[in-house]
Image 1 (cartoon, helix red, strand yellow):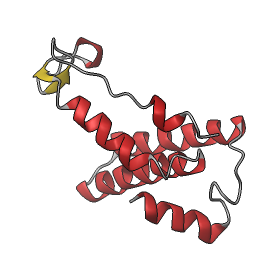
Image 2 (cartoon, rainbow, N blue to C red; image 1 turned 90 degrees about the horizontal axis):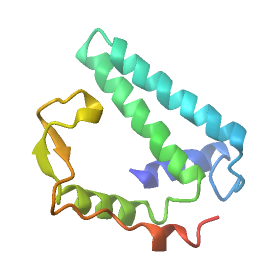
Image 3 (tube, one colour; image 1 turned 180 degrees about the vertical axis):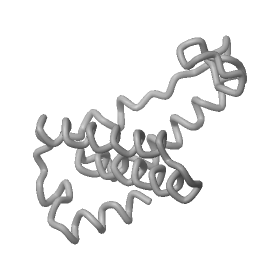
Length: 122
């Protein structure tokens, strides 16, 4: 998926290589865009609208990763975070309303280490 985002950004001249500076203004814009898509998901009336909002949310999230220069390391980071998630346990997380079907950090939880991936990204 990140490859498709990179291609889209290249088509419009907004890829990390075209515009390497990721400004505070762009950061605020992208946060607002992701919040807008989350709001659209929240207020969706149909399954189609829900799916569209979820896809758009992922597009902005992955696009933000690409703009920040993370496209080359994103897949490795994703795998590490997922591996870390697999060390969690099923249970209620009080931070998110105590929904019973959630993943929580148990005694065997191992956080993902992404430091080596981001240390060379500017």
